[in-house]
Image 1 (tube, one colour):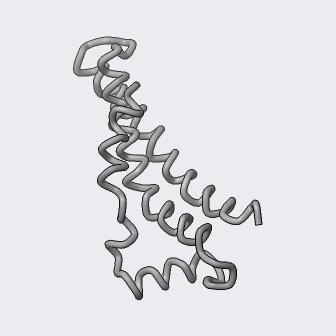
Image 2 (cartoon, one colour):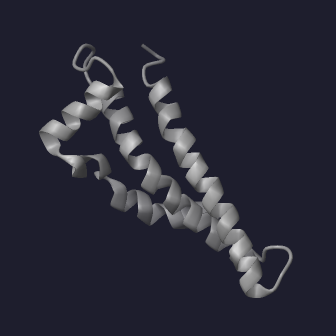
Length: 114
């Protein structure tokens, strides 16, 4: 189905975006205090965006892994997202949830600082 994975995408994006925007605002305000400014500098914005991108992927990558397994599996392999999660943990362990995090984090800072 075309819509397979829509709910899992929301499950990934909601906490990921919460981490992104919360981190962005916190770091932006922190850099303003450090620089003694009322408005964020370009450097402060770049640092805030980069850190926010990293925070997003740290939170989102386990959900992204589950989503990807769900979307790419043959129909009928899994009953639901919980089944994907349980099967993944049983067969590959918790580290499997974070497979691919290194390249995601390496690109997160420059991609989100821009």
